[in-house]
Picture (tube, helix red, strand yellow):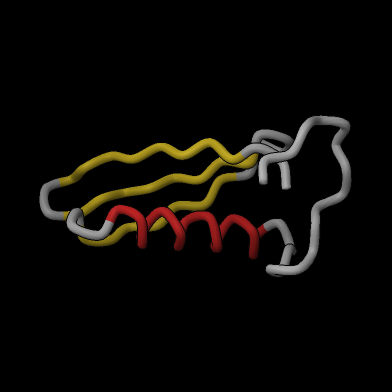
Length: 69
């Protein structure tokens, strides 16, 4: 998978996490409780992968860039 940029914004008792695919610029957002930032982050990444049409075992088409493991 290409690089994924993560943006986290606190909004009161909630955390808004946006995951952005570096190769395509596609974004996915998730919101959840502030006390579970890793869970909200995982959800945003999962939503992004689903949006890009990826499953857990698939790799995206090569964009010529490096990959994160």
